[in-house]
Amino acid sequence: MIIFKESTRINSHLQSLRKEGKSIGFVPTMGALHNGHLSLIKRSKSENDVTVCSVFVNPTQFNNPEDFKHYPITIENDVKILTEAGCDLLFLPTVDEVYPKDYVKKHYELGNIENILEGFYRPGHFQGVCQVVDRLLEIIQPHSLYMGQKDYQQCMVIQKLLELTGRTDLELKICPTQREEDGLAMSSRNLRLNENGRKQALNISKVLNFMKKEIQHLPIPEIKDIAVKQLEKDGFLVDYVEISNAKTLEPANSKTDHLVALVAASFDNVRLIDNMALNS
Ligand code: AMP
Image 1 (cartoon, rainbow, N blue to C red):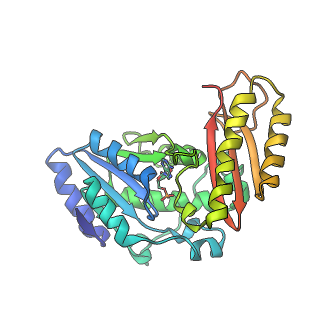
Image 2 (image 1 turned 90 degrees about the vertical axis):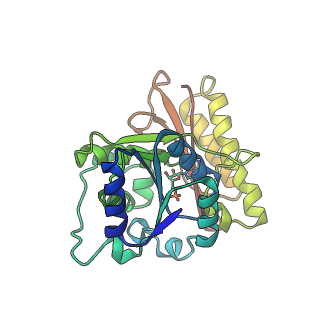
């Protein structure tokens, strides 16, 4: 695996590969890699000649400075994992490399998707996500982009970004959420949980499974209410439990829509998110 730290270098390296007719798959990450990230690398490898991964903890998407400060960094292990997985190129830039002096901060017209759920609880988060992905796409110029369904709303925001920036040829491939054996969605933030937190974290996926089981039997408000109470009983600070239209993420008002349940809740200041399709 070749590691690049400079954007101009990786850009010109990829330009020659593109000229040779090679297809390029790109997996952007913030590191502290786990099997969820690896599933994206594997999928990209199976569909492209060249797979590029980036590891960059983007400061502009953190609305909470404490969260940024404590974000886990395990770069040596990341390099080892990526090498073993057969990733071809790793882009490991500094902040100045992604946002150079002449970088002009853009505003993206995302519509209501950036005001609800994650957008509501993390103001400015999705603008930051769009800034970094827009910059990384400018540098890497991949044919396909791989992202995880674990960050359901983020996938919708990025699809919108691709439309807004005219990248109609770039395919966004959304990959299923990878879970631990007990059902906990894999996440870099799980590293910040202590033993008790790790045990309790499992209750998020349990609550999502409960919602999936009950969707045909109980009214939506009642399901959400039971889910919130259960998580609070388990010691979580709940930001939201929502049942949304899977296409718009607006709160669902009919059970005939394709529905997705979404949860964001913190345990010991570690904020976890997860989601599950309910009826598709
Ligand atoms: P992150 O490093 O958290 O920014 O995640 C980088 C990419 O990996 C994003 O597209 C995530 O949605 C994806 N990802 C994170 N966790 C998982 C998971 N458990 N299963 C599948 N994809 C994931």
